[in-house]
Amino acid sequence: MFLTKKHLSRRTVLRGAGCAIALPLLDAMIPAGTALAKTAAAVKPRLGFVYFPHGAVQQYWTPSGTGANFQFSPILKPLEPLREYVTVVTGLRNKGGESSDPHGIIEETWLSCVHPQDRDMKTGAGITADQMAARVIGQDTPLPSLEICGEPGGYSSLSYRTPEQQLPMEINPRKVFFEMFGEGDTAAERHQILAQTGSLLDYAQESTAALKRRLDASDRSMLTDYLDSVREAEHRVQKLEASAASLTNLPNAPLGAPDDFTELLDVQFEMMALAWQTNQTHIVTFKLAKEATMRTYPQVQVSDAFHPLSHHGGDPEKYARLVRIQAYHTARMAKFAQRLKGIKEGDGNLLDHSLVLFGSNMANSDLHNNDPLPQALIGKACGKVKGGQHLHYPQDTPHSSLLVTVLQRVGVPIEKIADSKGAFAEV
Image (cartoon, rainbow, N blue to C red; front, side):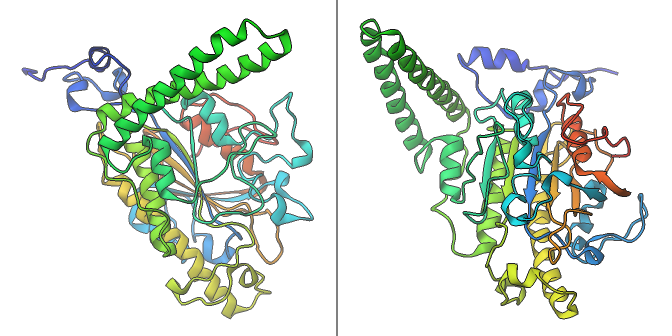
């Protein structure tokens, strides 16, 4: 057998370009006859958390059958064409999210499993799973993580960088695009604005140098903190400039947040796919709608406001309308997953290399309880997740154990989150 394929070193390309350019994975970067996973060009897993409010009607969420021989429930039915990528996990409880004010803490405890009263700056209790990942696999991209939403407001963010610092979630896809690639509608405008930004940062550094020598210790410390912020911004601009040099085929920036909710969710999901495809970040958290939302869903013939409808009182007619809303959310997620599957990358596709936790932090919305939570994993995390399963765990199994599992599968070496009991080997 003769191997004639030429091998192109990814490291050489980046060095030759004179800066750290985020290139897509090219076939030429994979040595002939060598498994991709054993090369320096091995793809990095992408990690997503997609949240929907008000839980799910359990009997219409939980699949029939377990293991590989399960049948998709009505709410999960839109994911059926992606069976091999879907892992439904049932039976989990989040004790840290339980409260007499459920909507008040339900969003912020989904990814930490720590009650706000138990947050601790010394131990880090209260940092969310996405930000734990950002500290490990988010440092080699222009953005450590990205936080977006389909509806502003709510009681809190899903993401906490520290036990006390929550990260805002952006609803406007135009601003999301700017955050990833720099301001400007076109590539030429972005290059120009980034160049101007660099000049301003240089001015800020130079203009404070002489001043610093004339200040006392307290003011010098304050100025040092300011300069550190400038350096961080400068580093961000440098990464954007490098990225902009290589990403010449980007679409123009979105015009703004569409009025149509379906279009808004789909555009935000497209921003998520674009972020992963271009390696602007490997971690995205997306809240589809806020807790206690009064949004109606005419797209699926539901004129009731979502929150009042979620207090169904066991009414079969309300169940039917709730299921339509919840299946609608799943359909938006399924469309996004199909989009990832259609993006070729290395020896597979982007869905092969991603892992998304799709779920809620509420079980029965009429009771405001947190047991059992509706959760599903979508994607294979570069072969680290089997897929095509329904895993049902005993009652009171910690939801935090699923978070540990997710982080371990994408390469974050963490053993404990809140009340976790270790990772799930079955996943």
